[in-house]
Each structure stands twice: as C-alpha cells, then as structure tokens.
Image (cartoon, rainbow, N blue to C red):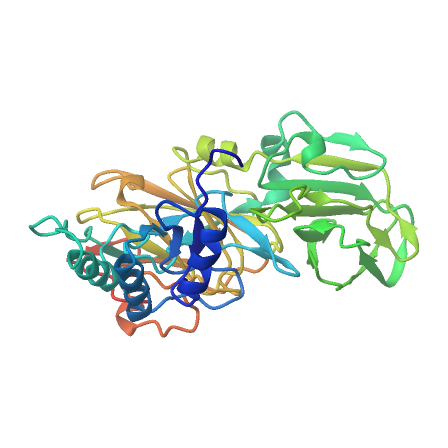
Length: 426
C-alpha cells in the first residue's frame, strides 16, 4: 500500500539474510524491520506443545541487532484464549487453537519471567543499556484439591433457560450466522419420521459440520461428528424420536483466503436415504445462564441413571489459605467448557491435548471466607471420579509426566498455598 512502510516477519529458524534481501526489493532505503520475530509458536489441539529453544531465539536476535535491524517480538508475553475466543488455522484441514496462548514466550501465560527472558535481556544489553535492578518476581501460585464435582443435569434439561426466547423454525438447518449466534453452541432438533429398527448410517454431506456435533436420540448420547472427518454414526429410533445435534463453534479461521468460516450445520443431515428436514434451532446463551447460576446453588436435576452426552457439573469450594494464581487440571474428563465464579475460562480437551491445565488468574477467585464456584459443561464422557485439581504449575504438553506432588491426596475442598516459584518449562 502506498505510503506504508514495508516490513517482514520471520523466526529464528528462517534465513535472515535471504528475507532481509527480499525486504530491500520493496523498501530500498530505511531501517530493516522484523515486525514479528517468533519467540515460540501457538498450539493446536491434538498436536505437541510448540517450543523454540533459548539458544535459537537469542542467536537470531543477536544477529539481527548486529545488522542494526529493528525487532518486534511476537509473542513477548504469553496469553490466554478465555471463553470462546481461540482462533483456528486451515492447513489442509481445520486446526483449532488451544485455550492457552503461552506460546513458549519469554514471559509466560501467567506473567512470570522465564529463562528465555533473561537470555534475551543479556543479548539486548550488548547493544544498549537495560534498566538496573531486579525484575518483579513471579506471582504466588497455589494448589487446591481434589474437588469432587456434583452432577447438575443434562444440557437438554435446561433448554428453556439456555434459550429463553424459544427455537427458530426452518425446513433446512440454518447456520450460526443466519440466526445471529456469534460463538459457542447451538442445538438443532428434529423428529424421526419413521421407525428405524436397524442401525442406520447418519452423516452430514460435503463436510457440512462446522465444527463439532454431539448427536443424541431421545436424550441418549450417540457420538460425535467432526469437521474434516468422514465418519458416520449409526442410529436407531422410533417414529417421533427426538434427534438433537449440539454443534460447537470451535473457533474461527484467523487468517487465510477463506474468511467466510460459517458455523453450524451447513448441509441438512442424512439418515439412511432420508434428508432430514423440519428443524428447530436453539441458539444457546450458556454464559448468561452460568452467570445467573454462579451465586446460587444450582438446581439438581433428577436422573434415574448417569446421563450421557453434554452435561453440567458444579461445586462450591472455599480457599483456606492465601489466594494465588493456579492451573485447573481435569484428569479423566474428555472435552468441554469450564467457568470459575461465572467467568468462562475456556475450552478443555483433555483426551486430545496437548494442553492439560487451564490458567486461573488469582483475581477470579474469592479469598478466605467466601465460596468459589466451578461449573463444567462436559460434552462427551465424565470420569468415574468427577474430580478436578488446581496445580501450581501448568501442563501444556500431554507427553509431560505429571509429578506425583501434584497428585497427592489433599483433603477435599481445602488449599495449601505454595511459595512463589518460577516456571521452568512444561
């Protein structure tokens, strides 16, 4: 664009000379600028936690500074995709980004200095003065748990509260965008027009699930259909059986040529040879409901047996020591969304990884004398022991071995606060 200064971006593994030579084609004069020097990289669900070595990042920075180049580091401070705010990439297939955006950055997701920060500071000190004096110490961290959660009820039992204005009716299913549902979840409902005695294939053609669908017949969880997957489910049911499909928006494409990343059911589902029609769409306002719930005891919904599929769990708990930052660990849980005191922490996907803990800033927690409330929407399978723990270190790579000190059996709903400590890896 005319009048705008051209810059480049690259990481420590890229050929700096080649890229800066390319920059000179577009900007013959003026400073060399790397406007995004990658100190790490983001994570995708189902892949390993990304890291960039301290030595590689510092060497790349020093080489650029020797040339007199200007550098903006991305990321310098790791962050968190709270709520539904993670993005996604399309690299031949849909790749949603994890809740953690720690990024292996010089300052961690929790705001703590890492060895990478001190190494970069040493490099910069060779070229200009750096401020004297100590850096702020890491924030205090705490441990808590295990906390045993109680069943609240199936998501379907709260439809009137989750969608107080009632459903939208349409012959064919409508997208999130068509009903002005920005993010989160929408429930699609129809009824079987005839009895199906044998397991019959059920699928959505032309990759029409955006992004993940949880299928239920008469409230019983049948399985998952997922974007870019060719899997089919096999369903049975009676005439008039209720077919519910809860569709999750897993995050919008963050960049690339396809900016129209519509969500929901993009095509009508097919059961056997029948195209299913006559749909009701329930745009769900789950956050509003959880905020209304959080200061109250949630209503218990009676169930003759353990429910399957999308289900709410909750628990109140005190903090007996000083409050610190912490990391919510969900061993055995499958996939879902979690709220602390009505605040949407983000998605967990324990079975997929690599992220195993969710960052909980201390400002979200109430101190001694007040009760805190955790609410989970588990979308698939609940562990035999529906427990969570709060750890004093993050687990961002599912291949990491969790130290036994983090699994020790503390008395339920009590806290021991740890000393401030530096995060020294994952």
